[in-house]
Image 1 (tube, rainbow, N blue to C red):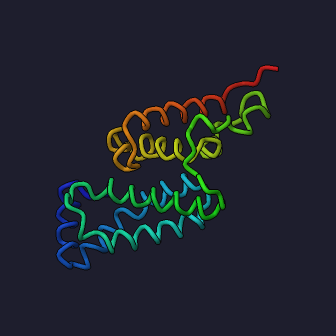
Image 2: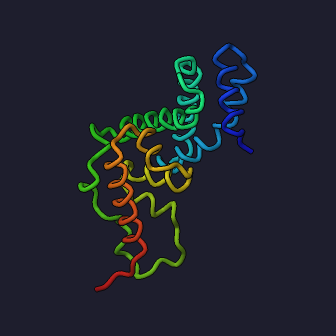
Length: 180
């Protein structure tokens, strides 16, 4: 189970002072939630493992510069988000991955059948832009407040809300019956 916030903050302080056991505990505690977030964001478990490894290395290297130990988890998710978007840019070969949400079309599978046999949320998330997917995952799966999601992704709160609304619209569309 995860540490209480005050225990996590204490572990951050210990790790910042050079305690390797505290650093190991922190990394073990955050590894699983970060991997879950990244694999859902990227959609490929092997690529997500690479992103997770880069994220954990960055956390180790940059931990001493974290000023508020209570913000460790949002800070770790921010690093994971940046690494994931970097990787998506590299893998896709596109110049711009974080497109404005309005430019993303409806999920491709939305018109193929009337009602889905089962609600396959991970597959439906594939039809949502990476920017909106990140907001959906952080807010609903990792139960972050929208203000925290905004901080993690380094975007204004209004942008966070619009990406959430767009992502929810895409999800609803993917589960609607098709009228012909």
